[in-house]
Length: 263
Image (cartoon, rainbow, N blue to C red; front, side, top):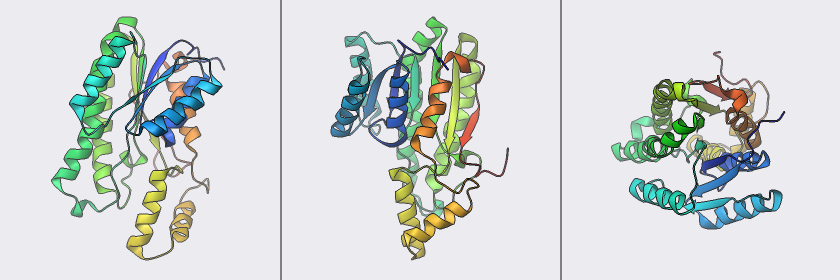
């Protein structure tokens, strides 16, 4: 299927590893010029080299920490202005809060991750929406979690922040739809990333059992009997970025191997 994405530009947040990296690779495979952004320059440079070897395109990256909103804004504005880059596709994706019970969470934990997720996603959307509206085309895709539909045990802060992101995205989708801009949320299930490994190890430590037992427990409640691959999230993100998905707007799309019991 030709997704007609060649020549478009995308900013992919959290693209130094995991789901963000795979989205960047898949978009580049479809002809999109990708602007990577994360805080680890060594990993970003590695991803950039990988993209450059596979595609004869002008990819680039920005090193930024999502805990510093003003620095993020300044770096984005300077880079896009200096390089005369207009963003057509925004992938909001940031590392989730660490595991832990909500009863143990501090107010500062909520503030930190609301800033990294909701605040920064809003900031980036505001920066790029004027051009998207002008072109009558834009895609804002948020990588959230199945916890939007069913809270996950031992992820108290994460569950809370994900719900806030989903509500923000739905509200935004209604406001920008008439301009040819869509806003959608992808809800990954148990996907084999560094974050899932951290969750497994933390849960195992809390319950004082082997991580292998935690893995088996998770697999037993997933109808597909396997964990997801980051590439599988990337395929959906790429499709949602295309004109083929122009009438899909304001929805939460689980990619979870059938884990959720609700439709």
